Length: 177
Image 1 (cartoon, rainbow, N blue to C red):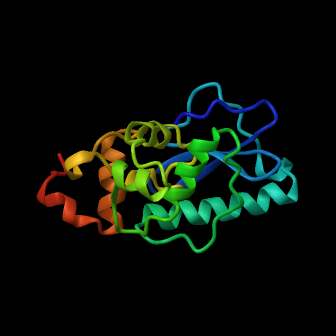
Image 2: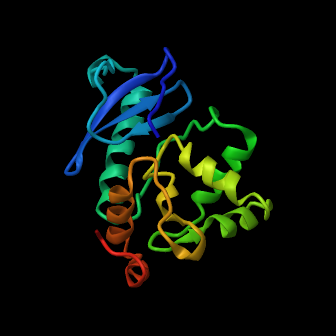
């Protein structure tokens, strides 16, 4: 998702082998992550000018992103501020955190897991609105028939993330394109 940061959020770049992500922090934690390349016009803060708490969170975020992008489970996530979503979206995002690395779920399975079995489409919309992709793994959710479905940052990223995590059972049905 492309974050529309609050004016009081702090934006910091997170350099990885896959490009420069931008992480946004509120007073309570990591509130959003944007995929590379950074959008023009984003005011990025220097790490030195940030409060110590944000610096600590950012070190956790960068380490977690690097591990996740390498297909490994992050050791530690920073506090997540998912308060920008509706109560339903927050339930979906918490449900995403329960999908094991290298595994996938369908929109319907996730809807059932969060006790909203008829909310497949709403689950899909919440996945698309996920403000912290990669770390809140919406890429692990598939459409009906175990098809890749959509991804807010493009299917190329979804394929790469799933491949690196080892969710290779998909490739019998989907190609790397």
